[in-house]
Length: 68
Image (cartoon, rainbow, N blue to C red; front, side, top):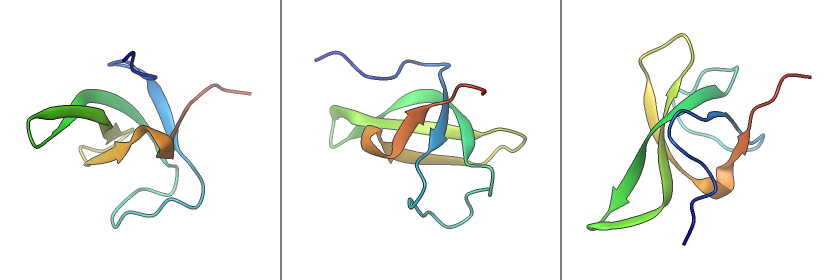
């Protein structure tokens, strides 16, 4: 199965998604494919821009970031 996102992609966490400690700007970069029980899932580790804070998200909570 092809992943929707790739390493280095800039992403925005979708509105309505909550995780403690997530910055208000919700912008980050995918730095790794997250692993669950030895199997790769459609989850990604995101480091938030301007921080060293990292969280894991399933792809359904992410959208590609493009400036308008």
